Amino acid sequence: MSEIRADGTNVRTAHQDLHSEQGALRGEHPGRSRNPVIKVADLAWLEFEKPDLDRAEVFARDFGFGIAARTERELWLRGTFAGSPCMVIRRGRTSRFIGPAFRAAERADLDRLARATGSAVRDADVPGGGKVVDLLDPSGFPVRVVHCGEQLPALPEQQPLLLNFGTDHRRTNATQRPPREPSRIQRLGHVVLETRVFARALDWYLDTLGMIVSDFLFLDGQRDRGPTMAFIRCDQGSRAVDHHTLAMHLGPGTGYVHSAYQVTDLDSIAVGGEYLKERGYKRSWGIGRHIQGSQLFDYWRDPDHFMLEHFADGDLFSCDVEPGWAPMSTSGLAQWGPPATRDFLGASPSPQRVRDVIEALRGDNEMDPARLFGLLKAANS
Image (tube, rainbow, N blue to C red; front, top):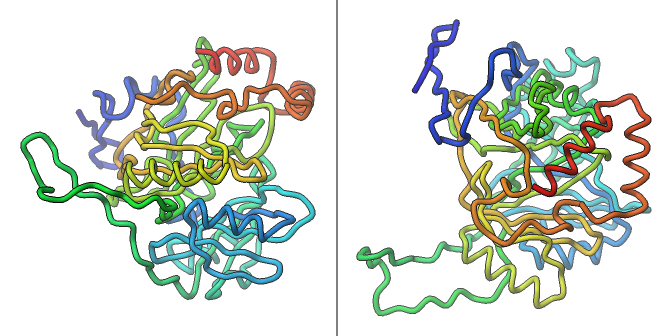
């Protein structure tokens, strides 16, 4: 099924079980900007601060990162794919997420972005050098847009296993014995953020960085108030890209939820999980397969309680796939796998969470009692 846009382009409306049971209703958010400032090409890396870089490096190696660079004050982590690093951890007084860095498609995009936002283009403090524009999104997250000079070379890959399917016997006279070792991270896939100003933040990423929505989620009985979660991808035209590079959801807090890193296949996820479990790390949720994005997933906590995901086999969408719309629910998070845990959902009560709720309900944001009740209902549905 397709339709013709006003500009003459043919658009696949994509709601015959492609990725959602339904699409937008008349007047709902289109999921893209008419005239964005630039169109970022991808997520470059994530920035954190932690007081103990030695402990951070031990977990990073166990989780499957390579080390791109290490100084007394910085730890740069990478995957096996050529390109930019996945993460930088800087020494700080507390463990905290700083913000994401997105990759500009062209160097000239930084000049255009700087002019439009009243910012400056400066040298990037990244291995290999480059240029960066520093921004602040409506949630208060520092957001960098970078154009790197020197790219990291590719590293040896963890090869996918050769599988037999029914009468298709590709492996004979050979056994399957994947080595018990860390999953080898290939690349950074996406980051998920919680915000009290979801609608404003969503429009900012679409208008400023040219990202487009793959799927919207809405609260039961509140669709007329707009979505409360969006899975957002980069717009590279006809080139298919990850179903989501950024996901955001409305909540009482403002902060990092998790980040996801691609590995080779299901065996890499499973064996890497066994490796992490043997070393005493805590699994948050997994193994399973998501609905929005379709990824195979496995979620873990690092020693500072940050959540990181191993994933494989995610959906890839080109620009002609329109947003899907679906109700927000815990049961709608996975096609198969164990039930989502309270740890993954952030549903365990804590003094900080109580303070977040009180502050959100008193503040100038998009949280109100109806939204809060709807989120609690979604977490238990």
